[in-house]
Length: 548
Image (cartoon, rainbow, N blue to C red; front, side):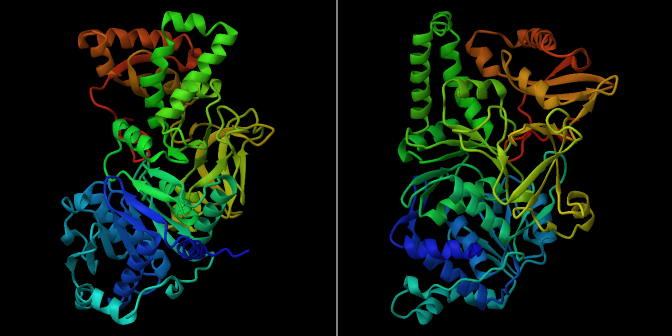
């Protein structure tokens, strides 16, 4: 079997030449042949300005068609891509550009406003993603190449650039393809070295479990600089000949609904927060009325109500998708139980940047509620525990998706990958007899109870987040006592006529109600209210280390 990743890109452009490829929502559309031409021009510019194979090229900006083209151009040239999340603060972007030894930086206009080129002294050039114009050049060759690019392209292809003229870098499995800096919930980002085999294996996995066709449409909401969005909202779809729509701005629920109803995506890749908001705000309140609760107890009517609700949720998401794949963070158990009860086509996967990203997955028709699926193809997964079915242990994995290590950080690499090739994920879980993995929390977040009991804050938070007027919460330990940090749902309270002065009393009621559900050793002693939502990573996981 051909395991070349760039071959996927090459074949897709050849086969889908006339099809629509990338659209900036409410903006311009590039066909596959337009993408090929732009890649070719960037290759000419790289070559003329002295970029060698293996040189690092960073990209930092909001999702857009031109971001996607620049990324594909870097890999198909044989350079190493360094995608940087546009939400990162300027000093973190400067740090990553310098640490990765990037030679060029493609930057979005919004990001560029906050950056300072003097802080990135080793860059030879900074290129605006929007139109590939030069913002900064420290190389005469680069300046000349950009100014004469159209002329050079015209000389090389005097008649017309056709599909048979394409020639891309032939990658090998262990070769470095990209360095992806993690958006850690626990500390500063590390540069994950992703080899071509991991990109190939994740793309192959998507072919094996999803069945998209050329021309199918998808809405890209997750940042492409994050491995989850890149692998399953961009790379796989591009390889299939799909038409990808980029929201290009902050994906608020209103914009997402609007895009879903216009585009009608064939598959939806989401983080839990988006689905939870839709269900909690739009669906569950309608089912909580006295009449509805009574009707739900009548078997035949209950089935009809569930079928109606299921259709409403499907229609709200465009009505055309095969399944919703949820990943990137823990999924609220009450929301999941509700989706399961109405036979909604969802599944929860599990992965991490270090596996580019997939570790476990299962099709929605066989998916075990509360799990995150089974080991993905070409991956082994086990629980580091004497009794994996009943005793929580660290989730470890090895296989084709695993990274080469952390860039310029041998110590961190040794801590993560043991001599037998097992990657230690830092996540805790159990595994049932069928191989389904159930995550309990992160080992770094685990707290010890008064007599040494293991407390998983995520499990307490999951229960707390379902109580009245709680938007989100974090459980922390202060002086051996558990404290709930809560960001209340002030908007809902205002709508219901509840004054702000009553919020503390309501949160205290929630604490009492929560403790009734918990064993004695994991009871919450007090509540602290936050007036702003907690800071999050781009995957929408709370940056816990800021609140410990």
